[in-house]
Structures are given as C-alpha cells and as structure tokens.
Length: 81
Image (spheres, rainbow, N blue to C red):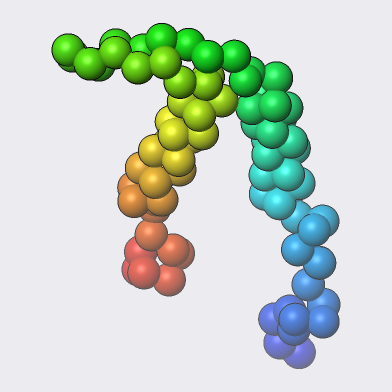
C-alpha cells in the first residue's frame, strides 16, 4: 500500500485554512473597532490620571492578550509524546 503522506504540493494553500480565515475576520473587526474609537477617555491607575484615545487602550490590551496567549500556548503535537 502506498504511503499516504501529503507533500507540500498536495496541501491546501494557507489562505484557505480555517485558522487563517478566522484570523483575517477577527483582524478586520479589530481594525473597525480601533478606527471607530478615537475619542479621548480618562483612565485612573492608582494615583495617576491620564487622558488617552480609547483606540490606544484597545491596542495595548490586545497586545497584552496576544502575548499572554503566545506564552501559554499548548505545545506542538510532536513535543507532547
């Protein structure tokens, strides 16, 4: 029986994979959120008060979330064995 491994030519292009499509859709939604929230808001951190655009806070918290997710990601299947 022939080996059933896929060669790179047999694999789907990266832009048709569900993970990529989901990432693009979420990226577009995030971009719309950023572009629509440019008004300044006041934030209080302990004894410090600052007035910053809401979009800047969204970008900062998204970066923190991506970083935490990247640091806590599950190991690849090969390393689980």
